[in-house]
Length: 288
Image 1 (spheres, rainbow, N blue to C red):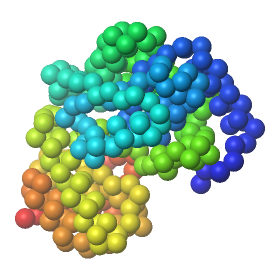
Image 2 (image 1 turned 90 degrees about the horizontal axis):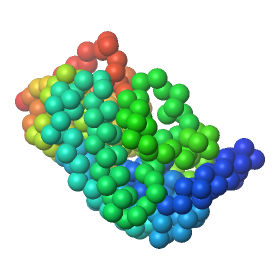
Image 3 (image 1 turned 180 degrees about the vertical axis):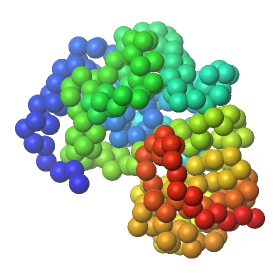
């Protein structure tokens, strides 16, 4: 659990972040509405003033309706102007084919569109919310694509880790300090399955419906994913919530109605990047 006060190391790294942002002069921030990009926008507004910061969100079929509805309001709360930027990654065969390098094509498209926005606004840089922990992950094709286009990474430059991002966010009273990660909808689709608007839409519908039903039933889960594995859906929730979710027939039926032939709840619970795993236990499925 992050602390409400800043330790000396975190204070030092936030000072480095402030200096780095001041050097940059003006930034278009790739703004997902998550903890990293929210802290970056807040820090940029502090360092540069609101007139030299734009929080920009890529708007495509892979952005969930839930996130689309929240990002503009959040940017306003952080004191920054917000812009949706149309992205067309689904027009790229490399993205639709959904290999393990899918994120390269997504970030390539996003950063190019953000650079166009920066040029139009007369801004100097495009910045991403990449943190120091992200750089230690050997499999992050999106980070490599952004770097090739010259995107800057102020959080990582200052050495800020994910835990420090959350601690700083809590100390600054940002509502995102404990927000679960919310990667794009394409991350729910098993590698090798073609990404289509229809697949993205049914995942979005399934997650929204399931989340609503669980909340109404008083079933708490911090993380929730509906993984698309072809005709079947695999639900991942917090391990402690697995038995209740598996017994929630209304929720399972809602996932089926979204367009899946069968649904299962993974007994191991939520695991970030679980689609990268090469072996799976096979949970019991329920069909129509």
